[in-house]
Image (cartoon, rainbow, N blue to C red; front, side, top):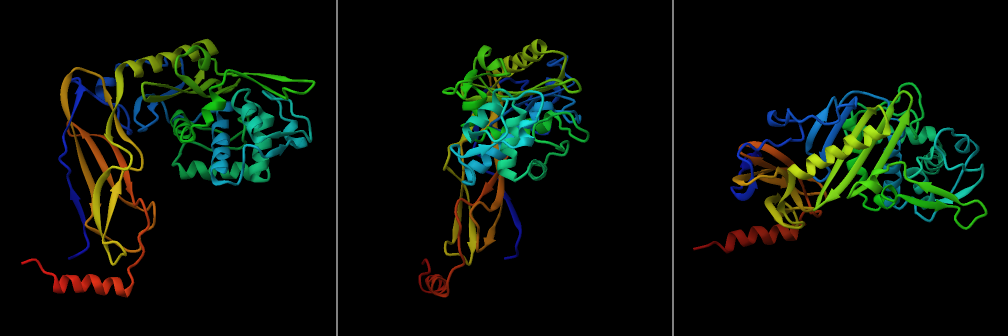
Length: 396
């Protein structure tokens, strides 16, 4: 049989509660019924997304390239968390502040040249106090130098498909050719939230550094929403005279986690008020609709000349779609797009196809379907037994 891509539709119909005029905001952007929603009026740029699916609920000039100020530190924290996840860095590792790191102006935790703090303490300084010095100290520890670390930041931005972003430093201090967008910051923020431990730092309102020393340093989170907005636990504020007041915020209620980004707000009061209003809107209007549980089989694909003759494509996590709250009934349909067969060997995590979820014929979301485990090429003995079984054990 010729190699071909076989598209087959799983006609599983799920009943959900939605409005008959339901108009979702897909990842590609807004739809007509949400066009009248006015949020973040004073922001130069804004976006509101569901962290689980990446669905865009609202956006305003979200791809405009703007100075991100200290929101830059989201990427710095992301690379730190990824280094911890890889095992190349530990929270208990000591980080020594260089003369250069200690010389940073603006927001800082006042590191002395040669002073050592743990990664855990440095993360507190970055996430809560927006320490420019702590950011550089971490960058030098991970990359060897800030310049090398910034190169890693830009490489990671490219891997994430961020087309509106270019970094020149790790902390967001004003410099030419350093920019990002609300859209790209939301993507970085979503990636950072894949490490739940980060909200231990971004969600704390107050803490101490050098607590047992003669000069304890009191940390108060620059993001006041973590204290005053129910469910808020991050992520990062930013301000420079050029960037104005910026914020990438996240909040979670009833299983729904949101990310709101605003850039170029006139003051902190307006910034916090408009982000709160964005959260209020989404929490009141939207909910997550479960599709598959983690580990549940979504489809199967034959494996040509493999140790196993087929591979089961399972949900690597709980899969959901964002739906608008309402009272009328509607349906969600799914389409699994996979090849009829794949050739061995198959690598663990190899992309095999995708699951497309529709509402009333419109795409709600797409999910990659990846191989849950590796399948090696079959040896000659396995192939012989398989061939023999087809020759001698034929159904009558």
